[in-house]
Each structure stands twice: as C-alpha cells, then as structure tokens.
Image 1: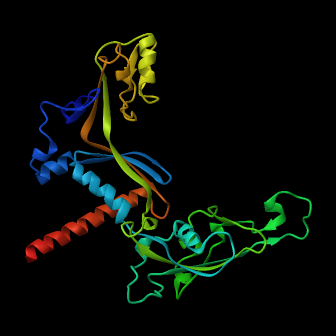
Image 2: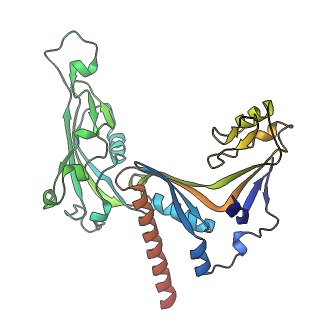
Image 3: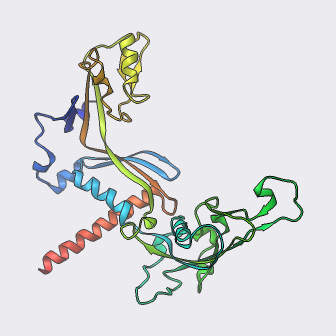
Length: 330
C-alpha cells in the first residue's frame, strides 16, 4: 500500500522498539490546524450491534487517549445510586446486593435527564427514575416429586426483568418502561429459597464514570496502533507453515505454490513469536504505524457506540471552550 509508506513507524525488533531514522517524533511536529484537519481521518471498519471498530488516523497520541478517557469516565449515563432495602431475608448481604443492583445497566437515555442537585436529595421527575423490586420465594404446593429447584420453587431465581418502574410526575406520559428499564431482563440478581424475600426501592440518577464505574456507558473502550508486516524474502514449504503459526489466525497466508504472503496484518498482536526460530528471524519486518489508531468501543446498551464517541467529542469541545474563556479572563 503506497499510502502507508509515508506513515511514521515504530519497528519491532526482538528485544526493543526501534524508531524510524527519518522520523523525529510527533512531539517535534508543529501543530497547524489546516494541516491537522487535512491529515485527520475517521474510518468505520465494523459496526455490529453494540460494538464499533473504527480507525482514527493522523492524530497525536494525546488526542486518541483523550477520546478513550472521555468515553470511559466523562460521558454520562443513568444508574442506580440509592437502594432502599425495606426487607432482605436472602443470603446476600445488603451492601453486596446494593452493589450488584448498581451495576445493572439501564436503557434510559442520559441526554433526556438533568444532573440531580445536591440540595434536593429526593430528586424530581427531570433528574430521577424510581424502581422497585418485590419478590418472595415460595414452594409450589402442586409439585412434590421433583429435584429441579425451578420446578418446586416459585421465584427461585430473581432476574433484572422483575424490577418494576415507578413513574414520577409526568414521566409515564413521556416514557415507557421499555425506554427506561433494565437493558437485559435475564441478569441474575440472586437465587432464593422459601422464606427469602426482597422488598427494595431503587433510585436511578445521571452520573459519570469518573465518580463510579457503574455510570460508565461503555463495557470497554480501547485502541491499539495499526500493525504492519512485510516479508523480506521468500518463505516456502515447512518454513511457510511455521511462519503462519507464529502470527494470529488470518495474518499470514500460503498460496498455491506453498509460499507465504501477508494476508491481513491488521489483526496481528505483534507477539514476536517469529524471533524464536533462527531460520525465520530475518524474514519478517514488523512495525506499527504511529499515528493510526484502531479503536474498539463496546457499549453497555443505553447509547450506541457511535453516539458515545460523538458525546466524548462534545465533552472535549466544552472543556476547550472553558479553558479558553479562563485564559481570556486572566
């Protein structure tokens, strides 16, 4: 790919990283806005359900890391903040139960709600969602000869789908339970036996992951540099098969002439296994493109991953404007 020849690279030797002799580092490059805009690209590679993979190209590492950190800790979401336990006779301690409930993701779109003020602990219909969980485990009288707990006990397993929404004010006119309830109905909260009972009220508010991980809108958000692999010489026969096993599946292919070739270097982990074999160590050049980031974002479900990235950009813009205002006011 000729376009990649101009890219700054880090070469992966057996025991160290080696800088390109013509590359003086991104830190020494002056930032010009027009040049930066021309170089920067975002390419969506894969979008399946709640998982998004895209390439962020031509940016400084600080920008890539800023987007990652913002998605993890400063894009808001809704989560259970207060758990009122009126009755809990299960074997799960109150604090463990509250922690489990707090980590259940909610469908509520945080953009439709306000942050709750510290002065009003009860909250309002504009910043608070209220739920309840009332479950009691009992023995089924009509079932006698069975060893299956699901058969002989009613409410043997308590799932997130049993949590009920209690609308406040005009919330019932604006939302439905499918809009604000739990994203997944099959999250196991507890297993119970006759005599075990839950009577709980849960208060959900808007928050950010910097305050608590339960408010993070992503299950994972990470990036890695684009790998590049080049074969310096022809490798064929048994050596070609051995070379193929040194890399992740699908990276090295073998053609009809039993000669190895680079099929797709994108998903290689750059493990350097090839350096274990002296007959192959000089056959491969491995590097990473230093300003080409492969981002993977997996949403918990309340917001789509592309929306989470856009919200992270908005947060960064807001921070920059605030910083500029403080500089001008000084």
